[in-house]
Image 1 (cartoon, one colour):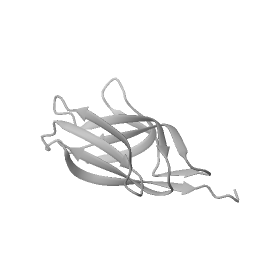
Image 2 (cartoon, rainbow, N blue to C red):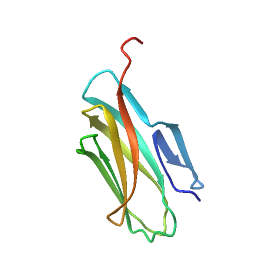
Image 3 (cartoon, helix red, strand yellow):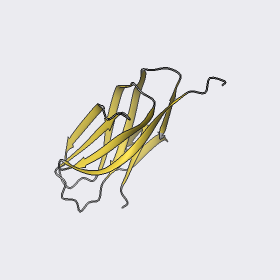
Length: 121
């Protein structure tokens, strides 16, 4: 199966282990800072041949300040994961990075934008 990282409102596994993601997004609109995102999930699938023992996500601002970190130990050759985040505070507009680490080595980088809400709306 293909690898991915999806930022979404929520993600869950059903009773058969199938992943569902609800409302995938790559941009957060806000009219002021700091912006607190009350709840979101990140669903990740990594290649099954990585020999991963640990996976980590790190969210950082455009100025490279880390604002959230989540880690999971891997058991039984899992390769699909859900990370849940609560009350993450974004203090600057721009492109935030989401770095995926496998066994403490940076594997890939994804992006999440924080934009100023259009004031004419």
